[in-house]
Image 1 (cartoon, helix red, strand yellow):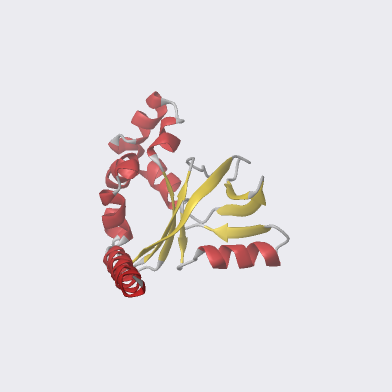
Image 2: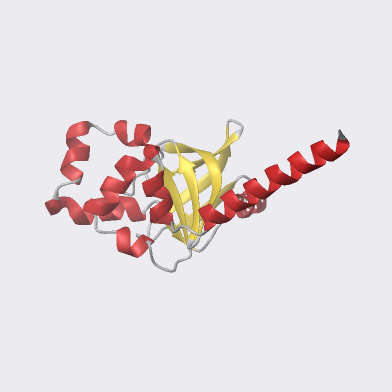
Length: 172
């Protein structure tokens, strides 16, 4: 019986490692495309012409909003942002969700401990976003004082890491 448990445990571990390595062999965009709940994000990345940049070497840390986060934006406003004439504004919003470097959850927690529960991050669009401990979780606070909860961390990619957030954060 012990031998069977050992064999099953070893098999499960091998599958887990292979799955993790397979995920890490994909870049940020490939992972986003493979997740149904990022379909709006992928559409926005294409409209802003940022796919090529996020397929680059990086490393990048992406705070990726799920579809329900985009759904909280008025549909008329969201559709307007996806139009070609608003490409620059959409690009600014999306790059506000990206930080240069690979910042894992442990790094964020260490920065929060060092900063008394807050850590300011500079985004690719040049804006500031604040990670903070709040209500038993870790949130991002945008330039307008709005919050988005980080719901899943450390989705490792070949060119960085993705942290999943509930809402779209906005620059000034």
